[in-house]
Image 1 (cartoon, rainbow, N blue to C red):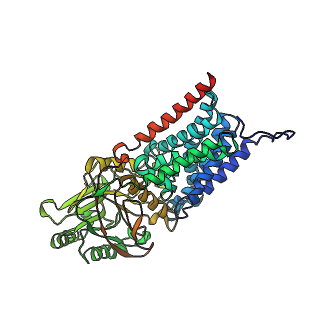
Image 2 (image 1 turned 90 degrees about the horizontal axis):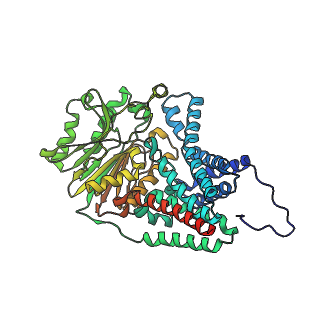
Image 3 (image 1 turned 120 degrees about the vertical axis):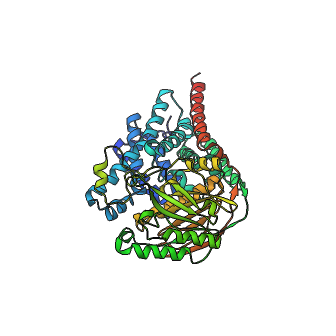
Length: 512
């Protein structure tokens, strides 16, 4: 069960305290943020996780392993989404001490998932019992992936800085169309579990396993899972770069409305899109004829227009995309955001007092349907999603499976997070959605990242951050289902279960 043999006459090393293991794990977790965009040092993700594997499996008992896992998760999450402070303090107006405490509490809560993964591994290792390679290569990676999946699902989910996102450009990206981002997390954790075994007699088999995993990713990355569908679209994506403090200020609303109207109607295109809440007023509050001017342009030029705008029936309101079509028979399309941000877009039960401390407009919205029809644009079916919805790959894959969408369109307002790493992290998630589905992704944002992403997850066209402009490009829609579109996360969950079952059989064989 030891990692290495003690040399003859060499005194055994004193056991490391749980507290020191927690400190090492917390530092390793925080360093792991450099594996994600904008840094992109993806090998750090495996190395930081290898530190967790070593410290958790060396910890003394289930409780100690859980504490080590929690410390790693706290450092990981605090470094990964510290930028939320900008939204709730700089723009939301929450007092600085309370804002900082809120971010720390969120990181502490999210770290419970990592703690649970390490506790489950330690408990199973003790219960069966398990040889060290079975724990490091089978049980711990499966528990890591399962608890990351739970973090992205329970209580509406918060899957930010999921480990697999760090690998959108590594060889493991080849698994995205098959296993999705959580499957990549599982394989990365398996690789991390193999690294400490380099000091163990099982090291040659561990090396062979890692080589097979990474070679498999390289081979899968060469497969074209989807095929071109219909004629390519000309698209124009408008990046307004409107200062957030001006967006809902009555003094600036007229200028904002005119700017978007001029940019949209300047040149025809098959599809023209503006960002989330680019039109920051309800339709009933707009100047007379304002929306109709877009409709007239669409009908006159054959353009399709996607406007980010809040919609209301007088009682409830939603964060929506309004689509204007050239055809009079079907002139209006509407998509309502269905996966809302806690506190920012809906108020969890018992937390209205907390939300009242922030001055964020449009803070209690109505959910749209989970499955909504795509926006028909000539030969293509364009599936919108709004900002935060883009981080839920299974939901997008299910919508594509049921609607046959050929192009994805994300409209976002990311100026809430200033010049932080949130913007490139969100872009990295958009790239993963293209990898998983084999579809191009159009992203129209207020201040960046406004991009066109290829079906292989590569940035084909982009605008500089924090500058006004219009991104013009030609985009080819794609059809056909990747394995991930058909199965979503079911295959990963089944494989993780089989991995744990294999560890149990391994243990049973040794006992017999």
